[in-house]
Length: 231
Image 1 (tube, rainbow, N blue to C red):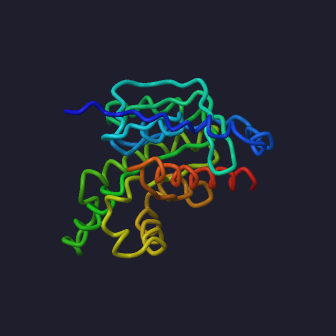
Image 2: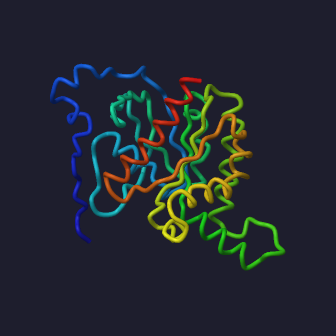
Image 3: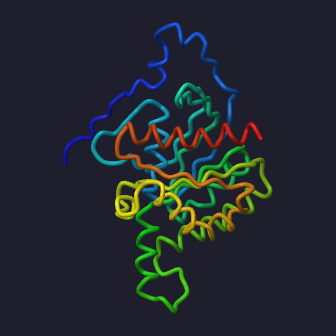
């Protein structure tokens, strides 16, 4: 198997050139938790923020990684994430999510688009039944139910429900981007309610198949954080 090629995207360094950089200010530091089942893109997103990119295949978390501080850029805004942990998505490790979730101001909950399309297709085959019809959706429901008390009792005021790997969902091409995002929002309504409702939860969607798509998804996440801070 070929060795993955890691590209140093130079995210932080890219802003070090030109007079415009002097006008940029680091936003206040922010503690966030990045949660989700295996292969939802947690490590890939965190490594993108760190300025690294695994060119072949996805990044996988074999063991918990802790980062004291990560600096990243989204558009013309800069962020500092403090005490960010890259946590395993195995069900046996879900208990480790509790501490970061309760201590963070923002919780990102990543779900895989493929799990959503699989659940929808299975539901179409059982029009008179009641879900969950797939293990993937069941894991989404179960982990959302686990996260909710941590949101209620912790510091977090915002949960960004983030659909990843949308490039693998055929519904995006079938529906068009705008209709697809509305469709996702409708499908995820039960999960939004399970996490605390629309007053706390925002839904974003995107892909992580390239640095460009990861940057676009990161921008959408940061847009929600900035909008929340302004309310």
